[in-house]
Length: 451
Image (cartoon, rainbow, N blue to C red; front, side):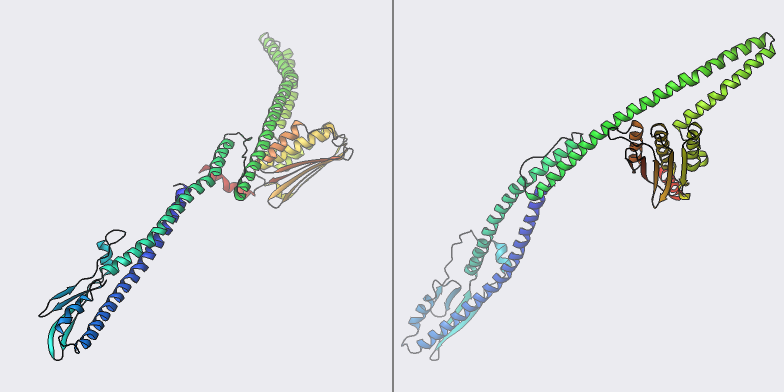
């Protein structure tokens, strides 16, 4: 059910409840009022007759005035008077015309007032002239109560109708911006982040509109950044593939070609029985395989941190430092890994390795540094990684390369943050803070995933 009809239903329920309570109160008052009025009419009628009997004692012929006494009640609203005796006379009450139609039987039964009868004997100067019977007729009084009841319903009914109409129109107008907001949200959900809400609104809805527009603007910026990052990552992947292809072509392919030639020559010489010469070709194959293994190991190290899965984080980073120490021994390398970092889960540990690998490579190749410090420390629920060099730093005109951009995207993907700070001539620091789980927490997650 829509909000509009819920509000209308709520108002109607409140009105019906108030009418029910008002009806119960009116019923109690009406029943009490009619009974009181009937008792008063009966009491006044009896007093009137008794006063008339006192006056008849002075009359020479009281019987002549009895008809006049009964006739004096003609037109009464609540009493039916009848003379019973030698003479007969009847005075009936006036039946009033109801403006709202005949009183329904259920209302008469609800009031629950039945006619009451009283008899007054006419004895004047010791002579019995008969009896005057007084009978109450609550019809006119019930009619009056019914008229008041219906009058009290007309005004609330009209007001209720107007209220419901106004609620229907006002709520429909007030909800129109929400319908526009729902449509705008659908558009944003479809990726149209340039959608904006316009127009003047109530203060409450204006805040909602401004919040939506701000959200859409931030989503548009994030979408643009994601597109840019995806393009950069694709470019980075292509560069990495090109570099691997170049290494395979320049480093691996010649050795494989040489192995193929030596193997063919050794096979031919063995068939000819020239074993000594074939042994030389076999040794040449072994000489070609050794640098080939080193080159493949180097390429695997670029693709996957060597030693992490086998020995842990410290061993993997020491392998990286050893790789660069053999090539740049003039640089001093310092490594500090806290004890709490050995139990990092695979994803966090590999991300740490990638950060160190990229920052270390940049410092060695571009910074012209004499000291490179790698610090990995467990801090509460996270791990901090800092790679600092004392090189020439990054110039203001320079921009981060694809390697740092890819590392930043990797860090943000696991909920961490990466910062690069540098001063020209003052060195560079690559710092990252990553969330991490204890080994027990990481192990507890495995069954949950499998289920």
